[in-house]
View (cartoon, rainbow over the protein chains, first blue to last red):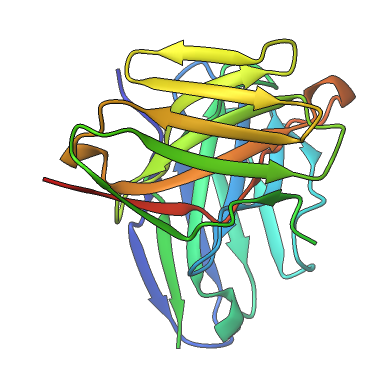
Length: 113
Length: 114
């Protein structure tokens, strides 16, 4: 079956611009997670959705970061006024329930110039 | 403050031998542990998990051992194959507290030499 997909695979933008990153979870998975991975680090949690609502957004670094999941399936991570420090690989994961094993997409590599 | 630590950034093993990857954690609330494997330009792929009620879980060539008193887990791969060469991440979650986001270590790069 289809796994988690993320678009775009690569995004290059200029400092100060707005970007949107999209995640399509595995069909039927109610839980969706966003993580960010910087070079030499493991993935770091950003936000978790259970259905349409954000159950935990404690990992979002500041108010420039926002995510939505309006219909409980596809999610969009939005970053305003991008900064060079936002450059990283943004990973999306989904799980069938709100606990247990998470299945990851290939990630979006964001580069802020 | 690193709650999940993988102290070996890299490991090199000969094909056919055993690979042992180690992971330590500090948060006693963690009760569910996972290992992921990551190839370049791909997302992490789930390998194997273990709940704190067990001390061992086995799946084919992969076995995870958990020592709760030492707050230590390890992944054994035997026999190691060249296709196992990847970065391995240890992850943990405090499931029983209702929190589900995973906390990851920094990873160990495994190279299996033919």
